[in-house]
Image: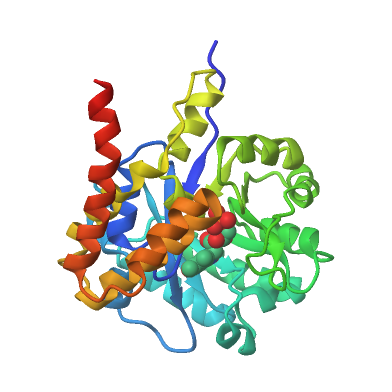
Length: 333
Ligand SMILES: Cc1cc2nc3c(=O)[nH]c(=O)nc-3n(C[C@H](O)[C@H](O)[C@H](O)COP(=O)(O)O)c2cc1C
């Protein structure tokens, strides 16, 4: 008898996991859903084009070309405005709306949004309840993503319960506080107390770079469902490996040499959307995100790339890396 596969989601990452990257990564298989970069909501009613820019998939049933559902994420602290804009998002095509309660950006937190809201569970509840109520007539599910807290994790359970009480149908927990930023480790063990108390599905997030990390996260949190962010860029096949391992199948580990081909594919796909300068910057950013997982080879590739100015030079570098990797394999045949 086969065991039920865990759910593996692709995280929202502003300026990184945009439409081309979502398309590319979900094509590798194993992903159950993705969440868009956040749409920032302040006091005005945003036009539909803002939602379509962040999430072009809204025009194609809110799925990526490989059929993986895309949830639209909103970030804001004013319940009324969030409710109004969630309505616009749904009219624009959103089929699931996700709420961001974890953004560490200074500008967002200064205005009481993002992770700052986690200091006031009643405000978290008010924002979520307003959006849930607004979308009830259309039957649109509202999900949420939170950190453990702002400066400490004291209110983690209160916030999680507030979200459930508000009617949120699923919760992703990034296992760090805002103060902990992105510094390892992620405190997976702190998710256990939340998952035990909540009836809604809870997904664990943070620092799951390898299958072994996944297994340690499950052991610490008691949660099998996960969301992967930087770690998805470092190993786009990790989602399918997690699924395969859950069925007792043998997994062929990813190697660093598998990545340049994917990066070149991203460059080709992003060519129609972003100017060259942006594409170059994003590839360099991607290389930085490979370092925690791949160490020295990733650092060397980044060092070789960081001062390159043109896409042709960057593509040549990636292609050379690909060709180098192909030589020993060809010899082995
Ligand atoms: C560059 C960057 C952009 C991010 N943008 C968002 C975002 O728009 N919304 C959100 O909820 N989280 C955002 N996050 C947080 C990630 O979704 C995720 O929670 C975090 O990176 C931890 O997971 P990881 O260790 O797998 O990367 C962002 C993280 C990074 C590094």
